[in-house]
Amino acid sequence: MLLYFPADAVHRTLEQLATGFPGSKPAIDTGGKAMMKSQDRNPVFRQVSARMQWICDDPGALAKCGLRLLESQDFASPQPSVSRLWPRRYRVGSKVTDDERPSRNR
Image (cartoon, rainbow, N blue to C red; front, side, top):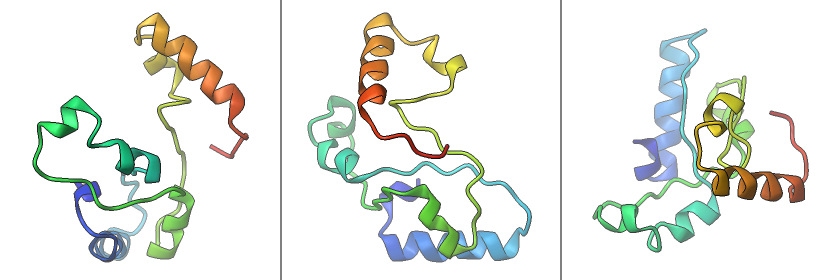
């Protein structure tokens, strides 16, 4: 749900969660610029009148809201238990895409 709110509202909410629930481990979906730009081309998103607004290219930057990143996954490098369930064409495509991307701490 956070993706559908402006950045300032998301940051305030995350700060409140970090302060109100110290030591908790929230799972948060983020989306980068490429995802936001492509939402109007995706037939699933086109069916929804609401548009995603919050752009977060670097989940590690959420530390400024009081959160500590424990793990980060993206569609190009999902957990093996998830990617095994994908159709072959997506598994192969994500492998090629991931090989071309610079490595980052996950």
